[in-house]
Image (cartoon, rainbow, N blue to C red):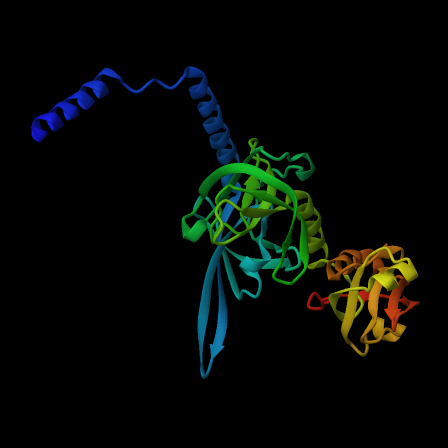
Length: 347
C-alpha cells in the first residue's frame, strides 16, 4: 500500500512538471540584461589594451646567502609614451620590475615616483605609441552606478569583474599610516593581484585605482579616486615624490578635559599629544616640548594626527605658521617653519 501511494505521488509530480514549463523571461528583462552585458563588454574592450600585468622581485639577504621574493599586481598605461600607474605596495622596494602588455610584449620598468601615503606609484617602460587609458572625473561619480574592475587576480591575467559604486568619500588607512581621503567603495570583486588595476565606468573611463579589500568581508573593496590619482601622478612625475611639510613630532590623539575646552574656548575637544620630538626638527627649534598638546595650526583646529597630516601640505614648506599648544593647562602660541618631509616621518 505504501509503495503504490508513493508511486501515485511521484507520477503526479511528474505530470505537474510536464504540464507547467518554466515561464519565459519577459522580453523587457532580456533587453535590460543585454544592455548591462553590452555596457560591460564595451567598457572592457575599451580599457583592456591599457591594462598591464606587473611582476616584481626583491633581493633578500638571508644569513650567508640570498634569495628573491616574487610578487605581482596590476597597472594601466596612462600616457602613450610608457607611463604606467599602479599601487605603491605593488612596486615599493622592488629590485626588478617587469611589465607585460595585453599583446604579450614584455618590458623592464623603472620607478618614476612612489607615494606610500596614497598607495600610488608611477613606473615607466621604454615603449611608444601605446594605448593610454582615458581618465574620467571622480567628481561625477554617483552611488549605484556601474563599476568595472580589471586586473590580474592571483596571476589570472586580464580578468574582468563588475558591480556598482557602493559609497563615496570613504577614508582608508595606507600602509604608511596616513589616511587616503575620498576613496571609492565598490562591490566589484577584487582579489590579491588586482591591486593597481583600473576601476572604470560604463564608458570605459578610469574612475579609480583599485587598492584594497576588506577581509573576510565580501563585496567591500576600495579604489583611490581618479582625481586624487591625477594630482599624485603629476607630482610623482615632476618631483618623484609627494612634497609634504614636516614638524618633527611624534604624537597620539588625546581628549582634552571639558573644563579646559570651555576655559580656553577651544574649537575641538581633542588634540595631538607630543610624545616624541626630533631634537633638530622645526618643532624643537620653535620651542615645542614633549607633553605639549597641539590644538591648532594657524587658524585650523587640530583634533587628531590625521588633521595634522592634512594640514601639513606642500604650501607650508618653508612658510612661517602659528602652532597653538596646550601646556600645563595654559594656552600658548609659537611660530614654526615646517621643513620638507622625507616620506618616512609621521608629522
